[in-house]
Image 1 (cartoon, rainbow, N blue to C red):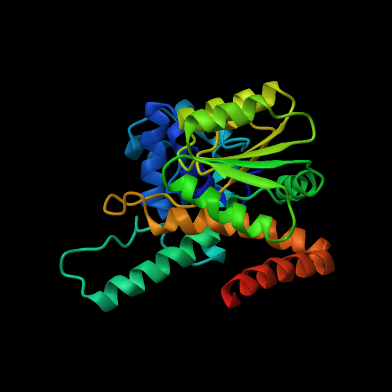
Image 2 (image 1 turned 30 degrees about the vertical axis):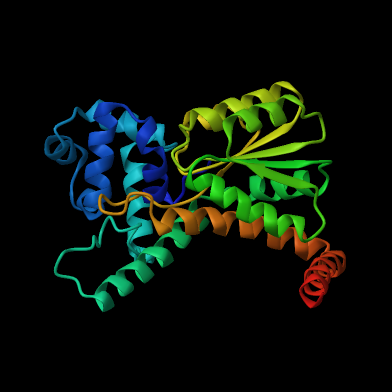
Amino acid sequence: MAVTSGNILDTIGALYHSLTKTEKKIATTILSSPHLLSQCSLAEISHQFDVGEATFIRFCRTLGFKGFTDFKLQLSIELATKDRQPNSLLESDITKNDDAQHIAEKLQNAINGVISETVNLLDIEQLEQVVTQIRNAKRIFLFGVGSSGITAEDAKNKLMRIGLQVDATSNNHFMYMQASLMKEGDVVLGISHSGYSKETIQALSIAKKNGATTVALTHNLRSPITLVADYVLTNGNRQGQLQGDSIGTKIAQLFVLDLIYTLIVQVEEEQAIATKQKTVNVILEQRIK
């Protein structure tokens, strides 16, 4: 992923869990006080962050920048050109004193923020390649456990209604069995916000060994699931402490999957509309009986 002004802070959040202990300390401070860098020299930053100058430069290079000056310039551009919405509820956690109206407004801001973060993190070229792979696939499988399994089922419903041969499961035994029977020309999409779901990673690994094209939908860049994926789609939502398994995560995942669905329909609009109407008609006929 190319890190440029406009997606630096979001990318740091997506890389956070793969960073070293010292890098996490740097990342935490930057995410909480990004304007601090624009006001200080490298020596001052190193002192405030309590890390060596060489360590901070290595952190900048980990993100793909030449060094501190390049990183500082691009971050300054990012901060100057957009007013950042809260990522999840990190910057606007719900408190005991909030009434229903304030909580509704905070959730609205969180959802707006997580969609913006997802757009910043998505590699559009990879997204388009995934759409092509899905359109040409013989069979499509969606894997996920827990709430990600529910997301997989929702995507299955939408893709099935436009005529794609698609299935979804959250049972690890079923995932392994399906993955073992996959072949070249099949596509499997594994959904794991953390990127550390052992069951989903194992299923993708099995599918990949059997020749299927594998796609990971995750928030954490460089997480284990990305190592067994041919394509990686990154969704937003760095979660606040009071959120747990939040609506932001669900919205971010559904946004990416709906984007895939929309791009497929855009290319095959007449066929997609006709197929979807056919599925609607058969359901209506059953209700009339």
